[in-house]
Amino acid sequence: MKTRPPDRKEPAEPFIDREISVIFQGDWGQANLHRVCGWLCQEIGDRSAPGSRFGIWSGRGGADAVHNVLAQDADAALLTPAAAAAGIAAGVGPLAVRGADQLRALGAVPQRDRLVACVDKALGASTMSDLAAMLPSLRIATSPDDGVNLIGAAAHRLLTAVRVTPDRLGAAAAVIYAERPFPAIDAFRDGRANVLIQEAIMTPSWQRVAEHKDVVYLDADPAVVEAFAQWCWPTAVVPSGYLPGLEHDLTTPEYSDFLLVCRADLPDDIAFMIAWCLVATREALESQYRHLPSDRSPVTYPLDPTAIATTPIPLHPAAAAAYAAFGDGLVLTRAC
Image (cartoon, rainbow, N blue to C red; front, side, top):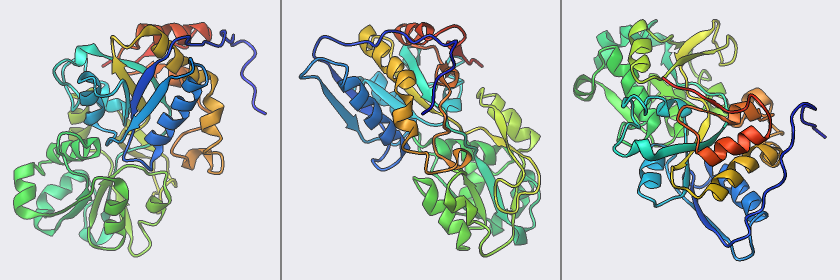
């Protein structure tokens, strides 16, 4: 059985002695955000007065999390990646919406992912900037940039930075759009696309992209790094060998972590309870992923409490108090 470090104090277990009703928003219903919501609903329910009710709305795990929380259609919602929220304070990026100053974080579920651009070697591209000269030959598989899908927002930010702008893309290239990663990955593997821009790199689907052809992974061009930096969105590295045929450390946009957001006026006892459960009951979530190697799991276990408390937007004050109760050094906030 795992034990926590001996120097970390354990705060008293909270209990909400009133009936509460909390609506979470996750993903489409069968992916990891919904699983996180189910975990939290049960743990909070075990520590709330009888008659308390908990619900989970299906969502898309993108900008809809912010929109629906601000509209009070959900009390707390998950989105990924956390990096998409980093520009909110500066008023930049895909989540810089009206009223975002009322948005707070309850914590993050750590998971390591990247947005990777991969091409069929036969295309002849060796850099992202090569794509602009190859437009008539491109068949790109990615997600739509529709104002909600953050994969699509990031993919089109990448393409625009190397002069594959939406108008040029629509006029000259074939694009296969998919809401979720796997149909796009399958389209690339099967040859219907020769360019893939997607996340979820820890999944078996990415391990099959080179089944029928040689592939080339494209490092982020300086223009791409700068375009994402303007959104306060960092780059990260995929280590050599992590993907089939990847023979060097690959620099590419960050796509990690599930960020749990709420409004600033979420009642303190609920915000405290959610944050407490994220840390104190984390083994209940970890146990659902331990059949997978940690570096291939959609949730990177063991869950690090400091990472849970590290968010790109300010924590709800009661969530910050919960993390502080676990000991010094937990309450961290990333900023642009």
